[in-house]
Length: 169
Image (tube, rainbow, N blue to C red; front, top):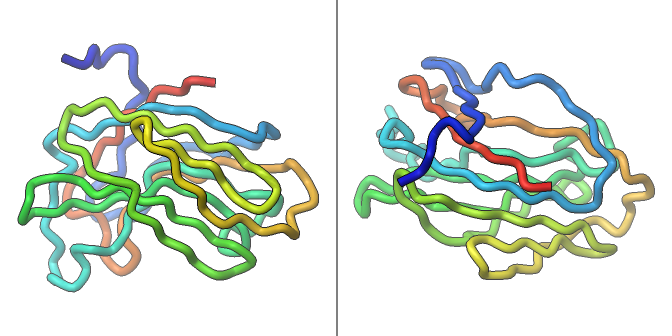
C-alpha cells in the first residue's frame, strides 16, 4: 500500500483545465519522478470522442518559454472499457506534436518515470521499460520550466482530479 503522506498531491479542480501549481524553472538535463492516481482519476468524457484526449500529468518546456514549440510531458487518459489509465510521452518537437503510448497503470499503482534530455532525443523510462522519443536538435540552452497537470483539450475536468507525485532527483 502507498504511504500517502510521502507524496505531493496536485489537484485539477472540477470544471478547470489546469491545477494551481506554480511556475518553476530548472536547468537539469534529466528528471525522475513517481506518480499514481487514486480512484477519482477515473472519468467519462461528456463527448465520447474526447475520452481518448491526452491529459497532461507533468513535464517541462525545453529550451524555450513556448511549450508548444519544444517540450516534453507525460500524458494520460482513462480507458473505461478496461478500467485502466493509458500513459503517454507527449512531446512538441519544433512545433510538431509527437505522442507515444508508454504503457498502462491502474489506481494506487506506483509508477516511475525517468526522462533524460539527449542531443536529438529524450530517453524515457516508464516502469523499467525504455523508449526513445524525438527531441529538437535546435535547442541551444538548458533552460526549462515545469509544466503542471492539465486536463483535456476541449473538455474541463468533470470532477476534482488529484495527481500524486514524488520527486526523485
